[in-house]
Image (cartoon, rainbow, N blue to C red; front, side, top):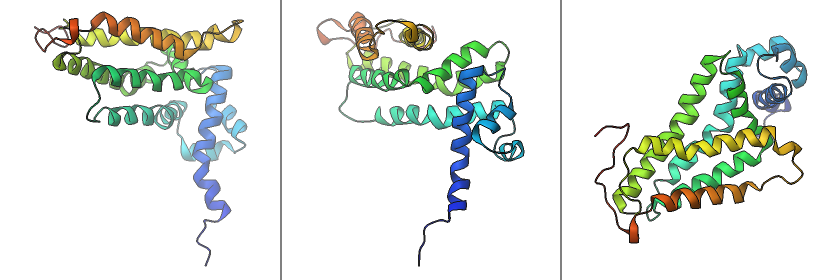
Length: 224
């Protein structure tokens, strides 16, 4: 007996992904505010009523996009950082490698640009992205900087949360650059070179002298 699902079942299971892909195309072309649910349904080739069976609003579509495209990558990095034997610097460079894949993907890198462009008009969308993406990323980086201090890889640092924000800053700028200026540059900057240079400059500036260091002086959130 053939246990393969019927074509109709396969189509129904694949439909949310098709709708999300159509939504991202529309958001990139028109912007989040200007995109209507009708536009997404038309791009996906479904009736508007069918679209509402899966997503009640544009905000729900955006949240689903983030959950399907970005959060699995964050979860994978969080899991990989439990691997024994890797130092904090190696883990931080692995995070940059993952971010390089996101920054090199035109569709994925469009998501943070959408948030930055529409945050003023859609604060709930910005809060969701801040909590689920930026917040988790910042917490992960803070924990790795703390680990580096405790292992003696990094010198004692006064504020690890601020350090994590400083580490993220150039990456956010690169996301904007990729969606704004890179398409019109004669010779776009290779993402891997940019991130490698960022890692070298940043991590070399906080390394403990002669590989020594300790947990003294490390704190988060400015607490003493």
